Length: 255
Image (tube, rainbow, N blue to C red; front, side, top):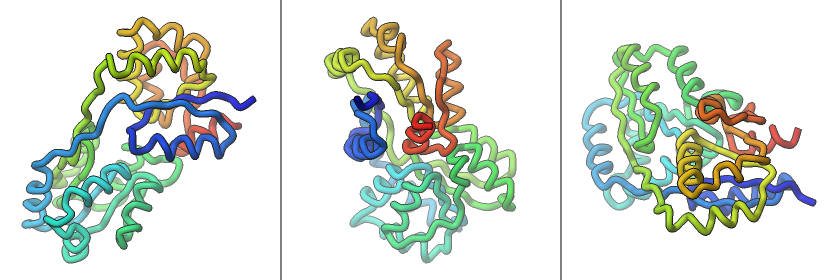
């Protein structure tokens, strides 16, 4: 019998997540706890930032790449902006890099596979001279602010543009899905971000299902920051991915 895994990812990633999980020999159940909502002002902010010199543009997720290009379509030729400005593109993760390469763009800076995280980006920026450089982030409104503080301390000029925001789903919309999860009885709960874990824990507590859900399932985290958020709630983390990707979590469980 296949081992059962449950994960909670944005709606546009669920189908791909199911495919990857089953490819690794697991059974999958999952649903989304939130929606990604585009920010209408982001296009104007992107346009404004290119009126001055931009040296590095950072994408922290494949969603950030897709949504940036989709919202700029017909308004700004984002690829042309990047090429004309001669910017260096920085990406976290292989999927983020692939989304940029699909659009004919080359990634110049990327953390090592074992460190797809904020810490990985800090290592990159520590290795290059960022003082007085203009660095633009195109990402979620929930992006880690510690990295911005770090770059400020290095005296870089940073513009953090929120391409989309997180909109939590209503509890009434999730109630049946949580009960389905209880009946599914997953052997493993996989968390791909601190935000996802915190939302999941809050929703499960509000439905009085937290004890039942966490009682027997083993917990897996995509990286150290997510693992720390879980541990702070007194919940044991059984697996931490060596490579900060969803497949990295599956590989950790498979060992």
